[in-house]
Length: 465
Image (cartoon, rainbow, N blue to C red):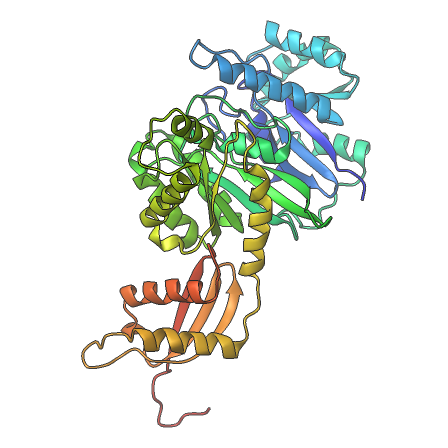
C-alpha cells in the first residue's frame, strides 16, 4: 500500500492556521480561539484518500520563563511537520501585514526543498486585498488569497492540492476503518503524552512538566507487530487532560474538555492514566465512570511507577514484604476505589523508563476481542438465569422483575437486550448488579456492558401477532 502524502499548514502564531485547517476539512477539528498559541501539537486529519492535512503550532512561538518549554516544543513540532510534509502551506495574515517573523519563516521554508504555497489569510473584505499583495515580495510562486472565516479562496487552494496530488477523493473512511481505536485519557499532568510518545516511538507529541500542555485531541495511526508476528492497526488519540467541571473556567478549557470526551466516545479502548504517587482521585473515579458510560472499554494505567519503585527501594515504605507485595496491595487499592471497572486490567508503567509500555497495545487488542466476542444465546441466557437465581430482585409494589430471554445486540458498548415482564421494575441498583455480574461471569474484564430492558407490549384484545 503506498504511503499517504501530507500537507502541513505552517506560519507564525495566530494567523488563522487552525481555522483554515477546519475550513479545508469541512468540519471543526482543531480548536479555534483568539488566544495565540492554542495549537501546540501537530493535529492530523485525513483530507482525502491517501492525503493527510497537518495543523501545527505557530513557528517562532515564544513564551515567558514559565512556558518556555512549551514554546520550544511547539517550534520543534512545526519543524517536524515541515520535514515530514510533501507540500507546505505557509499561512500569513493580510490584516497584520508582513512581520519580521514572517520574513524569518519564509527564509527557512525556502531552504526546505519542498513546494511552498503562500496562503494569505484573513482577506475578509476587498479592503484587505491591497494588504495581501504586499506578501508577493516574499517571492513564492504559488500565491492564494483566502478567508478561512468566510470560505473565500478555498477552492483555489484545493485546486493546487489537486494539481499536486491528483483529484481529491474520499472513500469516507475517516474514522480509522478496521483499526482498533485507543485513547490515552486522564487528569492533567499524569503523563498521557509521554505514554503516547512511547507507543509511537517518536516525540510527536509535546511533553512538558506543566499541566495542561495538550489542548487539542490528536491522533496517529500505529501498525504494531505482535509477538506472534501479526501486524495490527491501531489509531491512537492523545487528549487534553480532563479537568473537574468546576475547574473548567475558560472557553478554551471547555473546548479542550469537550474534544477529549469526543475522543473517548470515538474510541474502542481507553487507557485511564493515574499517577502512582497520588493514587486514585475523585476525578479519576468520575472519569472511569464516564468512559464506561460512553461505551468504551477501560484499562487502568498506573504511570510514574518508577517513582514508587525508587521510594520503596529507599526503605521509606515499611510494612511490605517486597516490591511485588507493594504492587499487589496498590492494585487492590485501585480496584477498591474503582469497584465498577470489574476485572479491568491494571497495568504499571513508567513512561520515563519505558517500563511496561510494551503491554499496552496487546492488552488493548485482547480487550477489543472481548468486546466483539460472540456469545451463544444459550450461554447468555443460562448465565443471566444463574445470576438472578443467586440474588433475585426485590419486589416493587407486589411485582418482581422477570427476565424471559436475552440476546447480545451490539459490541460498543457490549449490549444485552433483556426481554422482560416490565422494564420499569428494573431498579438502578439491580441493573448495576446485573451489569457487574454479567461482566464477571463472561470474563469481559474492562468491557463496558449495557442492559436494554424491553418489557411486554401492552395487552391488546385484537392482537395481530
